[in-house]
Length: 254
Figure 1 (tube, rainbow, N blue to C red):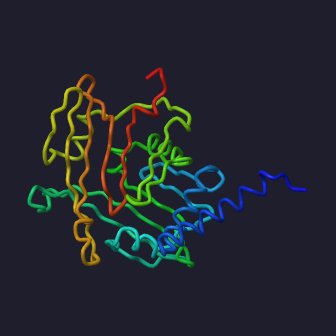
Figure 2: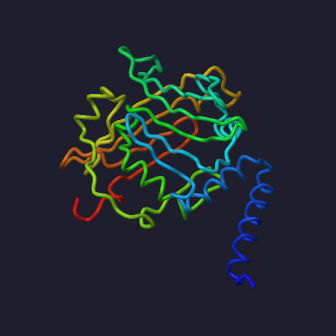
Figure 3: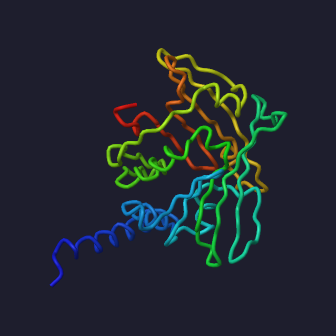
């Protein structure tokens, strides 16, 4: 006979999925929650490939292309047919205080690959994005999503860095970040850190009415005044809210 705890877990998961669907009336929350559950067995369901790009591959995908439209209310910059599916590319371009494109152009992209069933199979970020979210920290922050607290109202996850192993990696220096991103829109001076604020505009062919502000993405980079390290990156990218305190993932030796 199957142990009681083995029986309870599947029914608990099914119950949570039914509850999520009934509360929201939207299947995209169910698919998002199914993906969240997979984070508990990260290496079984995902693979990370980091080179010029950072790519998260989904081995048993749950999210559909329409789920992202439902979540962000934004359409991609490019929608291309590829072998066995489609590729979406979201272009983010740096703008000034008047939301005018900066010249020479500074931009980065996020790619999503979907299979023939329209399920997300890979999510990639370009090299410029990795200047503010180094691959080692991006991977460990994704792993920390398992067991995160879910805020359904704000549609956010609060990850727990204590649930993953610490890493021994170098934090980006302010000089290196500025060399790639240029001067910020503004700077907030705080007692122990400086917060550099950048603004990027999503290049999109359509935005659902009432969600125009979702295309404007503010990025806040916090630099330690003592050593000039990038310690916190926070931003809103096409409806995806990200905030990473890199110090929480560093080993005690750093």
